[in-house]
Image 1 (cartoon, rainbow, N blue to C red):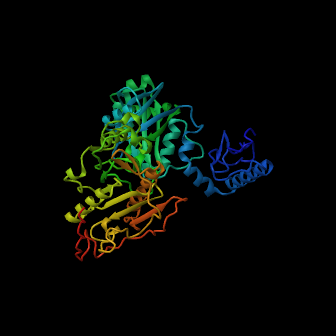
Image 2: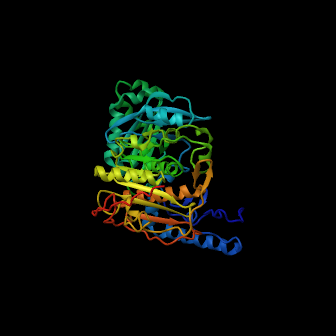
Image 3: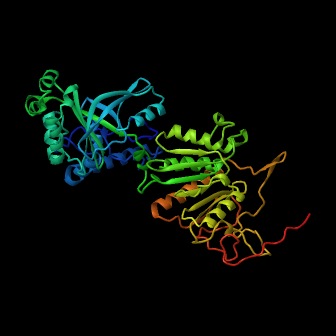
Length: 523
């Protein structure tokens, strides 16, 4: 016992008591017994004796279940199969990154090598531009291309759990046949018919399974492979004979492509293939853009378009995602450049223009108004209603000095529009329909320039609310409630319930009753 702060669980080593069981057991390794899932239990540092007793009791319960419940053993090994495949079973493990490849048919992809510092990483991808983009993102020199193939396969069958992980070619073939006979036959077909694999010192294979990529391979005998290059079937026969005792290589395969990166943490479809237009790349928009890219905006046939006519000034840096390197650059372009650097496989474009000068504004799957400027929101609202477009429009803004944030999703003619948040009758013209702030916000002025001060937490809060509604749209097909308010814990504001905003009959933008606007008072 070395960590009496209990930041990590005490190591418990199993010395005996698990005889007559398969060598491949769940939760048992040379590094000790895994008895608590990481972070599942907090041990009491003020009662170490009780904490250690708690660990020993749990360890005993896990061991008893391993011994007496065969289905538990099988299921847990299945769940942890990739860890068992790599941990302690072989001294030869290759680290491989895999990008966009097509393993549906019997095919192969060529290896490239990318140097990251002193580490050389093997990469397989069908698109060499994808590998070059990865190298650039990692700060590596251009990738080294090779003609060495990795043979790719796909199976919908979970890997079978052997008593012991295969360590020789003969054991590998037997396990493949037990796991998926069709997969076994496809591997054998490569060894029997493909001459190209005999040009190299090793043959490698990658299989896309329901639990991820599993890779393996083996070195080829240098003399036998040369003798069999015209008739690869002879080398296959060699592998089923004397060559079967040769040890196998294990591949640790990690996906790096956008389909994996942007969907791994989701249990619903991401923004892939959708065209998203973000109006406003300031404090709110910069954080919204980051979230959209991480949700998959701009991948596949999709596109993320950033619209903002302004430039980054020193006054912006205190609450913007960009820093000093972006100073005096157009916000849209600077944000596009930064996001493209972080996510080189995303299709992101910038339009440093006034939104009034963008004719194809609503030729998108979703338009997000993150300007926080009511006049721009009114304009976008009027364009959406005037053109009667199908594209939904999501507004998000900050109230006061950051006491609260609000968002409104508008779509077609259902529900209220952005202008429905203001009353239209003569007596209460442009009065807020749902009063939130109890006090007028603080305003500051520098010369003729006025602005509302708020800390960086406010745009982050607004971006979170906006992202939440986009996620609800992706997950459930609807962002209802379409009008949402989030106040900070210390804000002294009126309560405004989350709701599907109803349309005001007297709304000058979308209402059915015409209202004469009050005359402008002459000065």
